[in-house]
Image (cartoon, rainbow, N blue to C red):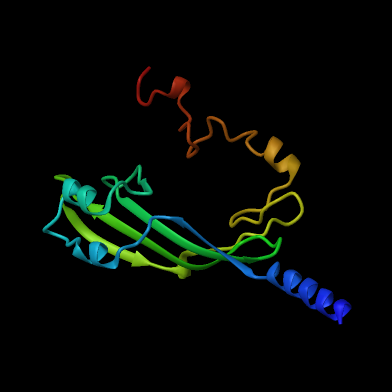
Length: 157
């Protein structure tokens, strides 16, 4: 009877160790507050007062604000996998008024698996020697970035 009880207790402890772990990262979403931000009504100050500091701000386009929330799961020692994500993008005009509120989810999440010591990218596949010697003859050539002029000046003697 005791070995059966000990085995049951051990099996229960081991099974508890295989429970999926849940984690939340980023912004804590309050649907009522998110839905209260309206284009043409709110500005930067009101969005800051309503939603708080953004997760990050864009360096381009009038500085769009992004609020990101992600829920992940993992089992035992496996790396976490995202299960849900909300990306809230708030766009502003030059005066600081809200022009658009866009929401996106998991369709924006991409899993990039490195292959060997390189990560696959879009674009040309060039070898070592092509990278090393690829610009020979193009410096100062007509139509190249330098434009074929001396010292980078155009139209001056």
